[in-house]
Structures are given as structure tokens and as C-alpha cells.
Length: 318
Image (cartoon, rainbow, N blue to C red; front, side):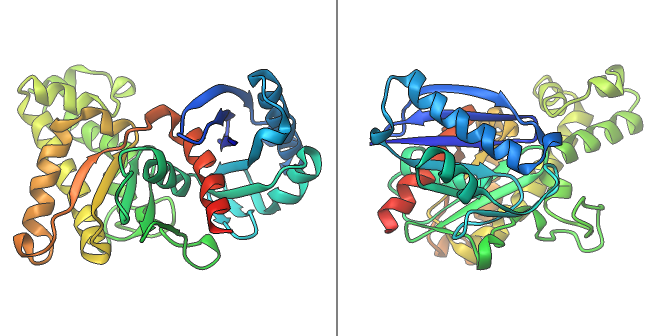
């Protein structure tokens, strides 16, 4: 059997046909017509799914179902998007509209949950019964696998890793609270931290870069060249990521934590100090079971493969 995986974003829907080993055999994308409303977007996604089947050379009888990784708050049981601010969706029934057009079962979950499932079934967390996936991008997202099953919380509203507080009364977060993990460990936060350091350190190469050109790689690139101000930014940033990971370790004690998102491309320059931080500050230290920390492996295909993995997981559960 094959699975359709759809990665629903605010500007595009990426989709693919994925086989039982997690390999994408065909993929494509369409624009997300957010301004046309939820029903129009869902109809586009349904037609897109049928096009993927046709272009892959398969027939609909070979497709087990459609999986969707959606932004925002998603009820995994009903497949409804409860709240997705960047789509302006509230209580949108995804399953009914798409199933009516395609005739296929439709499953839906938060995009980070899907990525966690994808890593568990087909990626770097394969073989581990308990894993946590943390993505460091515009925000901080996460997914949690407990005893081989996706943990979503009541009505899919759990596992919001980015909105646990690591600094009480700290930086303002987009969610409305202050001091959230996302406000310190996201790529957005790193860019803000880098810009602040550039202003405070005119002797640093950071100050030679225009503010508009500073991105999530800037501090890492200059730190590797020995720039002291950039190195200080990176070391502080890594410790802030570590604080959140220690909380996850102390709460769930998974076998492995995977880091995804653009920041994970820093590889061992990021991962080695993170491991040291977590080992040092996790409860019971070396007396407790160790937690492996590694980079997620699905990278740019995480959305598609993860959404396809949702279908595989739901079918297995039935």
C-alpha cells in the first residue's frame, strides 16, 4: 500500500506519495489559496491528492489514505483544525470535505506531531519506543512518542513544547505569555539575539552585517571563525535550547530527542554542547538512563513523510 502525505502551510501545500518504507515516490506542490476560505483550500487539496495518484502511475485502490500535517491546534480523532491563526481557520472539518471528493480515509494532526511520527516510523527515531522531536524554526514545535504511540493530549491540544516557560516574566512570546521556550530557542529568537549583540559589540564582525541580512546562520558562521561576540551569542543560545531539553528529559525521559528545523543543519557544532548540557543538568545525572540527542533525518521531506506516517499509524491502531 501507499500513503498520501500533505504538508499544509500558509503559502503552499506540499504533497507526495509515500511507500511503506517511507520513501517518496512522487511529490509536488500547490499554492494555498488562504484568501478563498477553508472549503476552497480543502477542495484544492483533495484534487491535488487525486493528481498525485494519477501522476505517480498508481490507482486509487493502492492508496491506504491521506494524511495531513496542519499548523495550529488539531483534534487528531476528528481531523478538525480547531485553530490555525496563519490560515484563519476555526473548527474546520477537514475529513468530510476531502473524503467526499477523493473517497479515501483522511487523517489530520499538527505538523510537528506528524514529523515526530515520521521520524519514529521511518527516520532517526526508528527502533526507539519513546522519543521527542523538537523543531527549531520560526517558532518551536514538538512531537512526543510514548510507548510507540503519538501523544497528542486532550483533543490534540497537548505537546505544545514551545509554550512551556523557561524564563519567568521573560521575553514576550507571540502566544501572549512571557518567557516561553519559543521566545528563546526559535530561529526567530536567535536572529533577535544576534542583532542585539551586533549593536552592543561594534568591534565584532557582527556589526559589519546589515540588520536586514542577519539570519539564523550568522552567529554560527562567525563563531566558527573565532568572533568572540558571535561565540557568546551561540553559547548562550545553545544553553537556552538545553534548558528546554532538560525539562523534556525530566518530564518524559525519552530514549532519544531529535532536533529538526533549519538550526539542526549546524550538526555537531550544535549537538555536542547540547548533549553535554543535558547530561550535566538532567535530574540524577549519570545515575539516570542516558538520552540520545541527534539531528532529525527527514529534513525537507519531514512534512510529507510525517503526514504519510500518520496514515500508517492510524491504520495500525485500527
